[in-house]
Amino acid sequence: MEKISRTRIIDMLKRRDFGISVNVKGWVRTRRGSKQVSFIALNDGSTINNIQIVVDLGNFDEELLKLITTGACLSINGTLAESIGSGQAAEIHATEIEILGACDNTYPLQKKGHTMEFLREIAHLRPRTNTFGAVFRIRHNMAIAIHKYFHDHGFYYFHTPIITASDCEGAGQMFQVTTKNLYDLTKDENGSIIYDDDFFGKQASLTVSGQLEGELAATALGAIYTFGPTFRAENSNTPRHLAEFWMIEPEVAFNDIIDNMDLAEDFIKYCVKWALDNCADDVKFLNDMFDKGLIERLQSVLDEDFVRLPYTEGIKILEEAVANGRKFEFPVYWGVDLASEHERFLVEEHFKRPVILTDYPKEIKAFYMKQNEDGKTVRAMDVLFPKIGEIIGGSERESDYNKLVSRVEELNIPMKDMWWYLDTRKYGTCPHSGFGLGFERLLLFVTGMSNIRDVIPFPRTPKNAEF
Ligand code: 4AD
Ligand code: MG
Image (cartoon, rainbow, N blue to C red; front, side, top):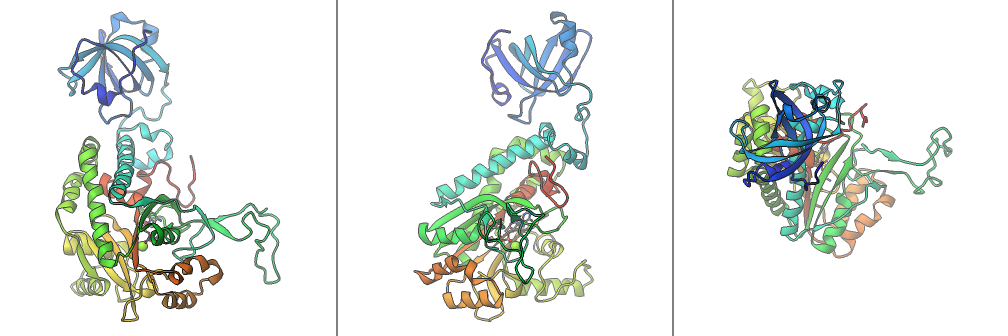
């Protein structure tokens, strides 16, 4: 086969130098045609759009033609031509075809219209579908948007450890990391496992959040963000929870809770706008195939100011709704940790736009949040989104050493694990704030997918670590 340098299909579809010899490589999505001519829809993953390859069957060997089946990988040399019928401006009239990889009829993606559940079982192949191609291109683009936003706003990308000995959220949902022989554990007189001889010389786990180390960095570099994998061994089999998910955590010295809300709103709007501006083909595909309201919903988030409301006011609204006959699965009362049905009621039914709920009861929030004067609430903020519920959780941090220590003691957090964190409050403490955005929750929103397992390539959930 003549060596012609390859053009990606996304670029090929934009070319108008018809008559030129070109090469594309990709996988056959469909093949149709007559006894004389075949039309192959070829896709190379660079775009949701296929390029049409027109094959004059008389010019090719029959044995070769038999290998052009759904899923097969081809290299095509041909002439770029103006297309009349393919829905694209350009198509290729094949002059040479090489089968890079044949694909027999056991290939599971023969037909269209598989369920999401089935596609999860073949997560190794699902990126080859239109839907997952679109989702993973958007995933990439959102990661780029996030780095660009923070870089352009003077934040430093700070790498916090994956393995840690402290439980940031204090919720005890950590996966343990050990090299100990689990069949032969040494225990002390109380029956507790001795970790002195373990790899790290102490009990270690996968991190639930990079925040604590992020605060160390913010009180040195001013404004930082983390963007990395986090892990939670919470046994929640819901469409919004993963055991392994990615989190973005900005942390800013001198920001108070208002600055923190402003940052969260500006940042998330930037990301949504980025998706509309840079992933238009993929977003449109998902809009048309799955979620007819997607583009409208994305646009509406950009156009409206987020509601900012204290938790106590939110509870009043929910209690009124209950009094007026609105049914919820879980009870509503002051002090309750809101369920996603409550959050979505506020966002989708009551305000009809995103809501930032603030000043939660301290009992349902983490130890590090700044305590309010009322002695009951903390300067927390959760950003609640349509269809998602909580997309961001954050707070102003307790910067007073004594108040923080007393909270650590109240909650029985072992001080010996926290000395380095408390040092930030001892040496040049300052007001500071930050938040965590769940990357996959953001992706649920911008793709319109309904299950978080479908916005990460290889989901990790209870009883599932295949691939
Ligand atoms: O509200 P969370 O637990 O907050 C923290 O971890 C703080 N340390 C963040 C900070 O202030 N720096 O988690 C933050 C976000 C949630 O709002 C949600 O979007 C996402 O992380 N999240 C999950 N996403 C997928 N699966 C899970 N199991 C998640 N748990 C939290
Ligand atoms: Mg939270």
